[in-house]
Length: 309
Image 1 (cartoon, helix red, strand yellow):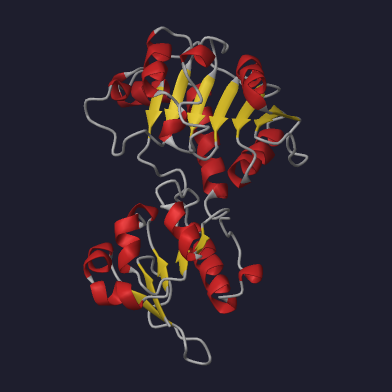
Image 2 (cartoon, one colour; image 1 turned 90 degrees about the vertical axis):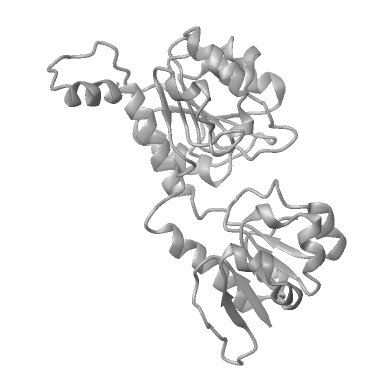
């Protein structure tokens, strides 16, 4: 069985029966190597490749492993038609994404960007606007693994944690979970900080729009580590310009890379990072473990982790 991967796992790895071989390839070769695509039973690579045209070349494909939690670019219709197993990286990046969220929340709340600017200018000057996290309300869009890790850390700051999901259930890290349109509005009205940790879908696209920005507190800080399409960027730009919100930290955008012409680059109280919230020195090992654990039990679906149904 041939396993083609663009993610460095163990090149040349074989199981004890020498029936599984991992072949490491870069993305360019993977796309161009028609023979490899035809023979590969397992492919581990970026979700953007898995459209119908690409999948038609993968005659023997039985299992797709994604190195991301998101799978919105995968042609699910073809996957289901052919009975291909699809697994993602749920849980791999949750810890660094939660840490990144609080890094950015604190940078904005403590006005650290202003102090760094003063340092570069060798300017000894205090800045009046400083926000504490203690006893504030944080609203988290999503109740999955990233949201739970954010909630756990929020409790360390003695924050009240609100969640938003399709079901009104979660773990003990959440004080309350809202559902539905009215629930989303209430979360936006009540929160001092809002964190987007929800997958992108038809239901969540442009979920945070101008109407909801108008309901938010004036000093709210918004952090997005999920998908850019969840927040209407035009409405966000207007909200910042009109001082409807205090600031925003954005790791993801509707179109990536973010255009140099985007107004977001030059807006005050905006932090931009290039889709790196999930980066961490332990992420690779967590990804490797999920994949190899699944590979050892494949094709037993009942024993595999992170299957997308």
